[in-house]
Image (cartoon, rainbow, N blue to C red; front, side):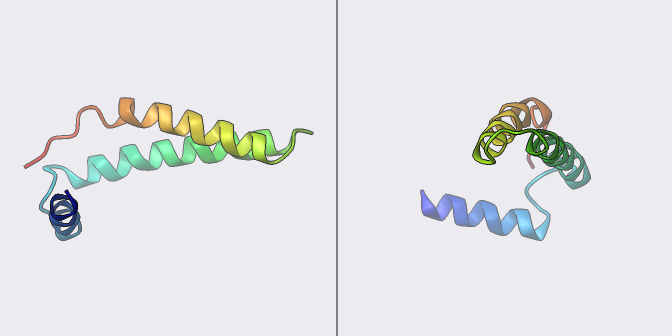
Length: 74
């Protein structure tokens, strides 16, 4: 299992894992910035800080599979 993960990581960093690397970067950036903006917005409220962190992480984790559903592997 670790060998498969290591092999995939090496291919990813060489740029040989996916057909369109920029699509992956774009979609991942959209997800990260969405979670970041939710965190910034909720951190301005009177909630304890752990609540916005948990909510923004949860929402970011929910939207990532939808953003990355069209990834094509080589």
